[in-house]
Amino acid sequence: MSVLVTGGAGYIGSHMLMALLDAGEKAVALDNLSTGVRALVPDGATFFEGDAGDQDMLARIFKDHEITDVIHFAGSTLVPESIRHPLAYYANNTANTLMLLCACVEAKVSRFIFSSTASVYGTPDRVPISEQAPIVSITPYGASMAMSERILQDAAEAHGLSYVTLRYFNVAGADPEGRAGQVGKPTHLVKVAAQIAVGAREEKLQIFGNDYPTPDGTAIRDYVHVSDLAQAHLHALQYLRGGGASTTLNVGYGRGYSVYEVMEAFERVTGEALPNEPAPRRAGDPPQLIADNAAIRTLLDWRPRYDDLDFIVETAIEWERALGAKELQ
Image (tube, rainbow, N blue to C red; front, top):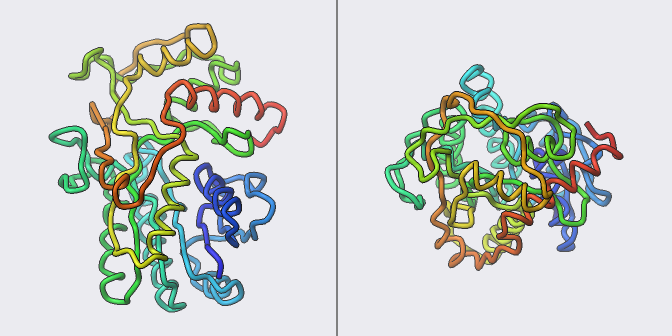
């Protein structure tokens, strides 16, 4: 019995593999390395290079490694990029998920955990956001993930597949032991700020909008540590193995921080202020995204270990410092 992790060489996928291996599971990673890094796949996990929608490869993996569970992270995740290249997002996120589910049904895979996103909620009417909030995606990224959620739901009802969909909010930080973290130059605030803090980026932090209807005018997000997110997926797997019914759950800490508050956390950790400058709002950025996490705490007994913004920032900074020596980028 093995667990397949798609996107296993990526930021969250690599942390998931470590969580599985630490729990004594047999883990298999699949990644096309378009954004993932082979060096992030931990020792002990079997690795295959390929697309999550490659049904021939999936059939071989399912058979040769007796895959009973799939945790699906592979996909494109940048909101601004999705607005510029919507068809690529529908192809990579929705079409590949469809092909993956076809392969799962053919191989009689029992359980499927889908790593979705709070972007499916669009601009919510109220916060914190519950799982019952309307799905009104305002970007191709959010829409592509919402479509995948619906495909998974329909496939599960028709073919007896058990699933948990986890809508995570703003994932950040790095493995506290320094084994993995985020690689590359994405647009996510904590990653960019950490690069600036350690000198990996010689530029000012751009504040994308300081006129939102929030207390300090900047956007508010619910930041969840990547290791806590991986543990949420592990709890979901254990829940399904215990006979739990298919469900959809938020993953967040239930409180938000503004851009300025994140900058203050960096100043507390480093002792230095981050150079910054105002910039126009980005399309597709809601004023606030904060999770109602009562359901996941109750149903999965999920208890975050790293619910501390300063700790999230500290682990992100330590990872950026380590990257200079590892040269993974």
